[in-house]
Image (tube, rainbow, N blue to C red; front, side):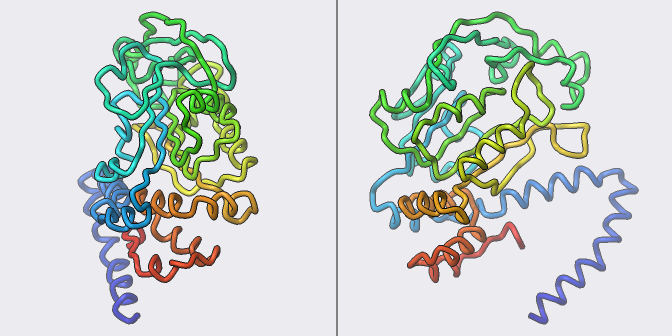
Length: 312
């Protein structure tokens, strides 16, 4: 305890001097961004593969990646060494976008809250930013884009795409449960969530735009409120890209079942092994330890020995 308090006091003494140096060199923001990323990735060097293997006992987690250009977990939300523990389902309506991707299942239509047809606005110079919504060029300044780069968001053409619900699409390929859901669809996230039916993922990662980059997309608070009403809770967020505001213009938000509510508690208990593995894989060690005690998991003493270096 003494040593820990001493280290903390020493850091508090040293930091003001570093602040003076960074201010002089005009490098404070770069240093903060560097340290922030190191903090985010703090648990990535740990390897929980043995624990995950022992818990799953040969079974796999079911992972659905909606907006999957680049393949499953292409944004490296969790280290690639854990990809082998997933049965993967990739979804993207952009023509040929998944042509060279390997996956257990590939769905080449768009997901929505109902079965319908929509127009996909294709951006030739930024295909990953193609959307069922038209780009809002006047918002680009909040993302740090210079006016000379606005043409990157010109719509080169539109494609008529078939849309269906997440619920129907998974049942058609005979997938009955869903553990991890990632949605990165440039504004269609809320509509996709509305089409989940009775599927209840144990972890949901959604891209959320605080300053809408596309016309007529729902306010980001509608998405969070929708998930809160479904008894999910926000456990993490991470900024995406540049921004000129003091808060990110765009973020990835991560939700898990609200273990303080009966339905969230039941969802976790009914799928405890999968939930524990997802928390380990995503580096949510400290929260897992708290939940395991709160819900009195039988292996809570094992989790208590794990170290969460994010909080170091």
